[in-house]
Amino acid sequence: MSDLSFSEAPLTWLLSNVFNALPNIFTALYNYNTWLDWISWDKTTEDKQSLMRFIYYGASVELFFATTVFVFLYTAIAMYHKPLMWKTVTSLETLANTTGRFFAWAGLTMVLIQIVIIFIQRIFAVSQITIGFGLAFSFDVSWWSESLKLYNAMIVALCVTYTFVQGGHVRVDLFYSAVSYRTKRLIDMFGSIFFMLPAAILLWMYSWFFLWRHLIVPKPSASDAVEKLVMKARALRWNVETIGFSPNGFNAYFLFKILILAYTGLIMIHALAFFYRSFLEWREGEEAEGRHLDLDIRTSEEAER
Image (cartoon, rainbow, N blue to C red; front, side):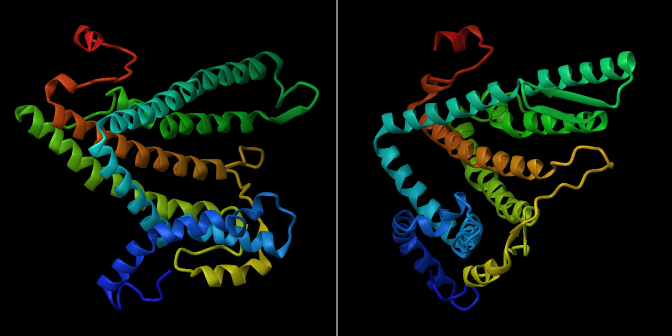
């Protein structure tokens, strides 16, 4: 980690972080216990310090440069070795499709819960619903009603890249359709790197600390250095957000903050997948369009490919 700040010497700061990126990766992997010990959680000082380091590095400058340099090197290798890039594209798109197809069932869960709520309220006129096999899981009807928002959020957050792969997002087309095939691929590459990826990174950086500020005290800040957070670890304790909108309503709103991180993580991953696919289709020509694309609904031309 460089002691220089960006404001003092921007170029030196940049080069220092770039050159230290790979050593930082190896150091983090070798000393994994310094930031992963908290998983066993024995309430020791070491566990608390480990958690604070994990929080810091989860949205840190070091992580940004380490990830950027690793992706840059991997992309350079994949551009040289075309089968590797195609394999990466299909793997990342499979991840998007599998995640989306699985969590799309949350829509059915929403419908079933709503049916049960209406049935219980109108037929039996009870105020609680209990579900369990040996271990009862009992909450007020209002809790179940408000929990429907979580399933809706799961569909939005975890099916976003699936919808992108399937071509289901709304797209405002001002001049895209009028340009040539290769120009379209260049526009796609530019958009994925300079719009899609930076937006996801910024959202991740804000959402990371937003999540942890609702899970622990003292509240961590994005401006805190790792040394300051480690010092705060002495007073650290879990303080998971359980405040609802009504006295007996849904009280696990911290899950929405986790979904925001999952949402941004999927977008970052798929931004790379979209860049790789656009690059390959640009380099190989129109015959590569839609190659290995796993679509739920195919046209006759796509099915032939």
